[in-house]
Length: 280
Image 1: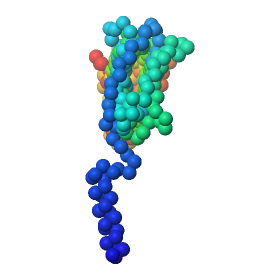
Image 2: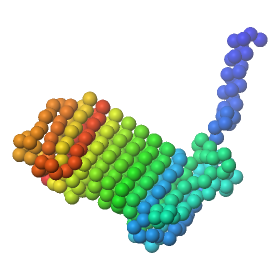
Image 3: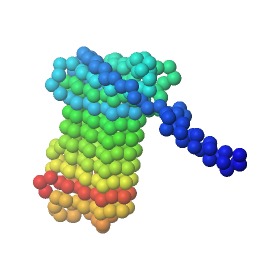
Image 4: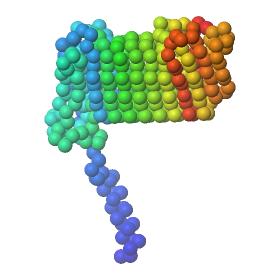
C-alpha cells in the first residue's frame, strides 16, 4: 500500500470513528438535572454567585426566602450524582453560591446555570466563564463578569460594574454610576432620572446609546474611531458657553454647574455613539 493510500485510509477511519461517537475525549454533557434549594433570607445581605459554562439570573421578587434552581449538566450520570450545589452564608451574611464538581473538576462541556429569586439583595457579585448574566431589582454595588454572554441589569439602586468579552450590555433604570466594558457587542444604558453619573463605557465593536435624566452632570467625553457621535437634548446654554468641542467622531461637553458631577467617558472603536437627555 502506498503512503498516500495509507494516509487516505487513516483519514477515512478517523471520520468513521467520529461519526460513530469516538470524539477523542470531548463528550457532550447530556445528563441533566434541576435541583431546587431554599435558603433562609437575611435582609440587607448581598449575593456572591460564580459558575462555569452557565447563565446566572438573579431577581428580587415577592418571596419569603431565597429560592434557587440549579440546572446542572454532566457528561455521565455518575458525575451528575456526585456534583454538589453549595449555598452558604459568609460572615457578613452574603449568600455564597458555588458548584462543586467531582474529583478532577468540571469537564469541558459540563456546566451549571442558576435562577435565583429573593426578597432583596444589597450588593451582588455574579461571575460566569460562559453564560448570560441578569440582575433585576437589587441595590448596592453590583459587579457582573462573564467571558462570553450578554449582561442585563434593570431597576438597580447603586453603582454597576459590568464586563463581558463577547456580548451586548443592557442596563436600564440605574440609579448610580456605570462602568461597562465589552469587547464585541453593543451597549445600551438608561440612567434613572435622579442619577448624576458618572458613566464609563467602552466597546471595541458595537454602538453605544446612553439615556440620562435631568440630574446628570459633569464633564463628558465621547469618542469613536469609526462612526458618529451625537448629543441630543442638551441645550446650547447648558454646554456651549462652558466648553464644547465636537466633530463627527468626537464630542466633549460640560453639563450642569462647574464642579458638579464626575468625569464621564464613552468610547467605541467601531460604532456610533448617542447620548440623549430625556425630556430635552
